[in-house]
Length: 149
Image (cartoon, rainbow, N blue to C red; front, side, top):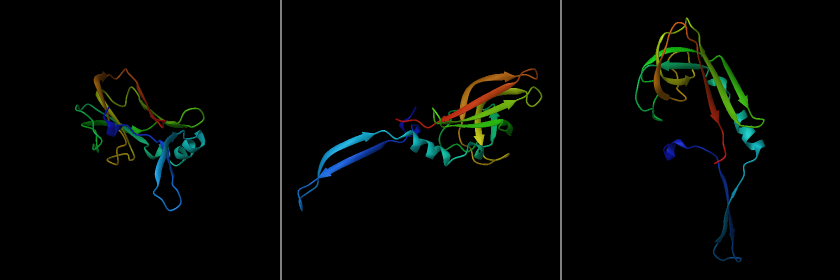
C-alpha cells in the first residue's frame, strides 16, 4: 500500500508558550484521540446509497487512484443492500449480488458507481479471475472503514 493510499484522521495539538512580548517557543506537540461521537458525525455526513451501483469486469491491470472506470466492465447492477454501522465500528457496507441468470463469464475486477451507466467510480479492485457459470451466484460485500491511525 502506498502512502497516498492511506487515509485517516488524526488530531494534533501544538502548545506554545512565551514571555509577554517575547518569541513563541514550542513547548509540546501532542496527539489525541478523536471521539466516537465525532467519528459518528463524520459518518452521518455521507450516505452509502450515493454509490448505489456495482460493476464487475474481466479486465486486468493495477488499479490506481486516477481510474474512472473498470479496465473492462462486463456487468452492472444496483447494489442489493447498504448498511451504515456507527455503534461499535465505523464502516459502510455494500452488498452486491449476481443471480444465476444475470451474468456468465470471467470476473476479475469490481467497483462501486453512482450511476446505472458511466458515472463516478468510488473504488477499483482487481483480483485473480474466476469464472461464474449459469449455475452460480456471486455475492460481493464491500466495506469502507473509518479508522483511527
